Length: 187
Image (cartoon, rainbow, N blue to C red; front, side, top):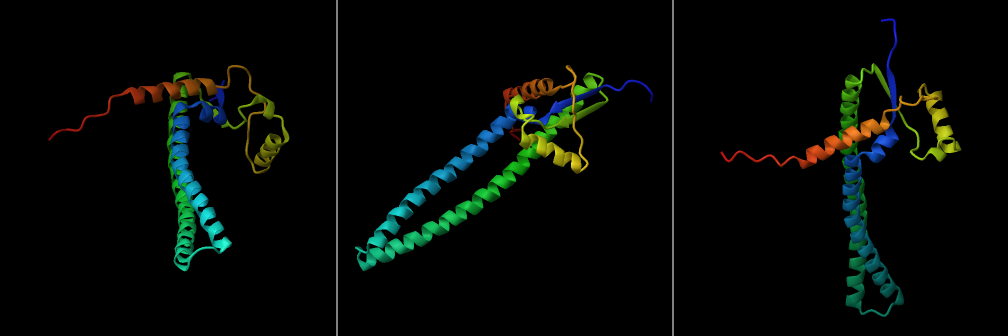
């Protein structure tokens, strides 16, 4: 139809950085990784002690054999932990990104319908305004454009709905967190 089309944009980086659920997810991943890092640090410390003792050559044969075995087992455990961490983090990030993406799409759709918007475009700029015109960001944008991408080059005041989406997402997240856990049917 001929006429005026209401368009809005939002900065995906701003939404992800200010969305409380996204920050909670980041915190969960960080806590999981911290446990593995602490175990790895302890193993590395023990490994250094055992290797140092082996290098000095002042151990009994039985103690030398024990330290060699401990060294081998510690290295294996560190390798296993590395694989576990990569697999766990990869799967967790994939699951969380999809969940957050769906949240943002649902909030954007609802906001657009409520405000009569026919088109909402997401873009990605650094949240720090001073980084927008620095070479890494400009280069990234030029590469995206070279590959057929599009981005807003000018956004008039009132067209960017990033903060409104963040407020909506956080409100919904808080409401959902505040809901009492559903009780199971005792039957």
